[in-house]
Length: 104
Ligand code: FES
Image (cartoon, rainbow, N blue to C red; front, side, top):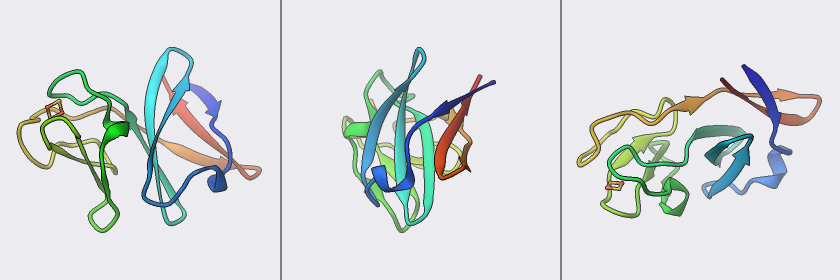
């Protein structure tokens, strides 16, 4: 596991998805209130960036902009078709005011 610094909480806008590169990975980060969620930035249905999609802050889900599958930001599980497989998700921790993402 490697910890990557991905900035401060205030670098992220509530309810907006943002693509972030750490090492060789491309992630999508979403802030909802004071929590930040991180998934692989690739829909499990087809190869498409989830960072292009809309965030539902009420249900804590992100919609793939290509065919409309919804994914839980909490664990990457697909919540609707056409996606049937989860997207990898990563833990975020706050250390000395900085957000750190743990990736394998
Ligand atoms: S590519 Fe995401 S739902 Fe089809």
